[in-house]
Image 1 (cartoon, rainbow, N blue to C red):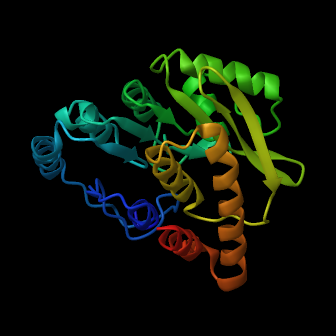
Image 2 (cartoon, rainbow, N blue to C red; image 1 turned 120 degrees about the horizontal axis):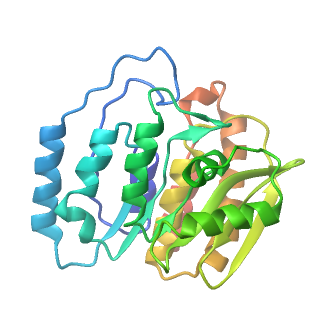
Length: 257
């Protein structure tokens, strides 16, 4: 949320940020202090948001949720039907395995939420889990397309899918499927593991889709910007665990206003 919220705001979108858990460190980290979860507060907040924003033009972005109970609470809320555009990043796994504390029960709950999404942005591991396939880092474009087609059967008929974090040799990119067109886009990979890249990608994507920019045009622009952001972070930060530096994204959007 620290990454996504300012990016969304930089697109001129006034946002209501609803935290579902409070962490002391990255959700990927082992041995963390137990997060703070308040389901009763979340239920009341979602209801109040529905009462305030129902009938307006609303855009939604959902990322890491962390428990099946939280996913179910959001899925069953009235607010979930209030979005003209809902982007769901099914944050739950990477490098072939679930993040700490997440499991098959979480996966089952998340699948229900995805049926309400207009745009879904899994990485390769999440795509494999959602479609019941064994994760493979080196996957052909044909196999990738087949898995996306399987995922699309679980979604709205016109839902858009973007698979992120696909690596080929020294490149990284994504595959997209809009139900009427599909394609790939790759750039040179910056070495290292950068926390927050998925959050930033989803937030920029929401902003561009809210501006009615077609996915085929949005993806290359987002990828090029993300490459610059990661390069900036690599040059500026001694500790990559602090996450990516989103300054370039914010400055770029403010200057365009």
